[in-house]
Structures are given as structure tokens and as C-alpha cells.
Image (cartoon, rainbow, N blue to C red; front, top):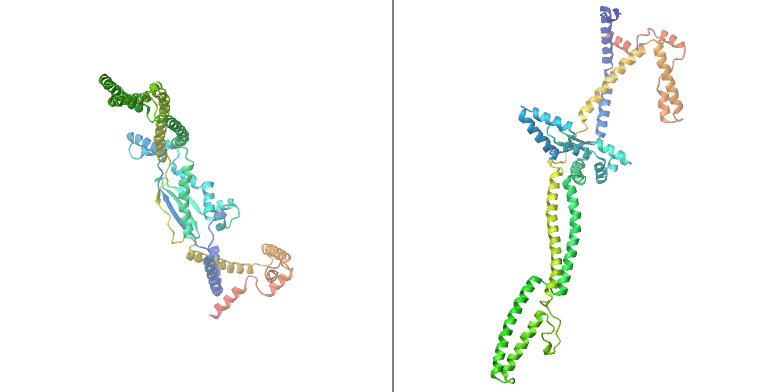
Length: 473
């Protein structure tokens, strides 16, 4: 066991060195072939990289959303900073927020961006199933997820959205559409208390508006039917008018009695004053609603334009009731309207708003593929594989045909070759290619005879050619 870890002897080191030199000499003498391989690999790798479509990346960044959780954590951080120094308070506040299960709105935004609803809307808006060549919506979602990255920076809270696409304009449009769909979806699924209050007030306002319209309609019909525009004001005006008519009537009657004492009943002045007294009594009777006040005049009273004083108290009760109901509904509607507006403002405050820090612009620089690097790597890989092939081929030729490992590999290769020929269609180009190439299995003892007739086994044609070139020099 100790011999396994023993240092190699000088003879083994010299043999290893000579073997490496021999391999390098073999590679050097095969430089013309390797040069052709280099040129072919350079041309093919260049062609392959030119066939790869360019990819562009559009980036948009969002400001950290302001939410109630962030305010609570800020207050906790300020409270902890009173008794601590440095940034320990903020760390303790963040740890407390994690322990209490407080989630930031930034994480919520990232989750919404990665949701199936947003993906489906973008797939439908940009027809991504056709663009990505996916027949099923599930495959289109997976492809879109591979072309999209949404992340939140832990320290600053800034949300970054990256979209890659072969079309730079479509990449920028998709990044902008992500922001738009995020804003719409957050507003739709908001479950804040202000939103619930606003929804309740909306339904309540509709019912109160219907009650207000019904009360106003009843009040208007009643006032129009009974000519009761304003019962209190009408009553005051009618009482004042009745008092004035009563005073004029008393004065006219006094004058009439004085004239009757002086003149006869056929006197013009007596007759004129008596007509005036009758007219004043008629007007006073109309105001008072007394049907017997003008019975002596034997005339039929027409439909009054305004309600009489006797009817005003009866109309006033119904008028006051309808007027009160209308005013109550107006006050309720006005109060609910004010609360509704306040709820809308509060809802706007509570819903996390999407604020764009860096808007997506059309990219002008591709991010993939790096053609020069790919050409260099592919060409170098082909050159290295060719060197290994030259060395491996030389080692294979130097290996004795009687070697069991070589015989086993030849057997496998021969079997695969025979199977390939059997599977390939008759007369096809692929069958001819397979028939011309491939390693045949050993055919028997003649192999050893052929090998002996050609000289030493460990002298391959490449090594012999290298020896002839050296002797010529």
C-alpha cells in the first residue's frame, strides 16, 4: 500500500516525458490537417452563430410600494432605535416583522407579476402562442416565465422587471404591459377596509337616491294638486291679506252707513259704496273659504286658484310631513355622498400604488448571443478535440491487435455497424455512408500474421513518417 503512494522513479518520469514529447511531435507533424480542421471549424462556428437569433432585454423598475405594513414596520424601527445604536433597531424591526408574519407589498407585487392571470393577459395581448410557437396555453406560460424575471431588491425594495425577446420593441411593450396589468390587478383584488366601505356606500347611495326621488315626486304631486307651494308662507300672506281686506271692509261699511243717513238708497254714491262693500265681503269670503259669506249675492263661486285659510291647516299637516321626508332623504343622501368621497380617498391611500422609477425603453444592444466568444470557444473546442483524435488514433494503431480491450471495442463497433446497416433503408445515401465507414470486427488469426508481416506493432504510419522526416533533416 505504501508503494502505491511512493514517488515515481527517474525512469518512469523519463518515459512519461518522452511520451508527451512524442505526442506533441505527432501533433506538430499533423499541423496541416489541424489547420484545415481549424479553418473548417471556424467557418462552421461562424455560420452557426450567425443563424442564432438576437435577444434583447427591456428593463423597468418600480418604486417600493407604500403600504400599512411598511408604516407599521417603520414605527417599530423608530421605537427600537430609541434604545439601540446604529442599525440594530431596523434589523430588530425587520426580524419582528418576519416573526409576526408581516409581508411587504413588494413581495406581493412580485407574486402578482408571476401569477397566471397576468401571464394569460400578456399572452392574449401580444399573441405569444404564435410568437413562441406553442400550441397549448400551458407551454406558452412556461416559455413566457423563462423570458421574464421579476425580483425585489432586499435592501432598497425596488422591484425590477426584465423581459427578453427577439424583437426589441415587443420586449419594451411587454415590460410596460406588465406594469399596467399589475396596477389594474392590484386595484381589482384589493380587500382593504376602505374598499369594502366604499362598495357598501355605493349600494346605500343607490337605495337612498331612489327614496329621495320618490319623496320628492310625492311632495311635488301634492303641491301641484293643492296649489300648496309653501304653506307657512302662504298662510302668513293670506292672513295679512284677509286683515287688510277686513280693515277696508270696516271702513267701507262705516262710510256706507254715513251716506245712507244722508242720501237715499238710489243715490249714486250710496250705490257705489254698497257695491264696494259687497266686493270686499266677496274677496274676504274667498280668502276664508266661507261658502255662505256671499250667499246673498246669488253667484256661483269658481274654482279657487289658491287654497283658502280654512284649508291651510289641513294641508299644512300633509305638506309638513312630505316636506320633512324629502329633507330627511336629502340630508341622508348628502351625508352618504360625503362619506363615499372620503372612502374613495382612503381607498386610494390604502391600495398600493405602482410608481415607475425607470420606464422600459426599446433596447438597442443585444444580450445574446456573444458571437465572437462563441466562435472562439467552438473553434478552440474543435481544435482540441482534433488533437485528442490525432493522439488517440495513433495510440489505437500502436495497440496490439491481440489486446483484449481493443478486441472488445472492435466487437462493439462491428456490432453497431452491422445493426446500422440493417436498419438503414436499401439503396439510401445513409446506407452507403455507413457501409463505407465503420470499424470491422477482427476476422481471426490472420490479423496477427498481417501485423507480423508489416513489422513492429508499435510503429504506426504517423510515427514512421515522422522518423523519415527526422532522418532526412
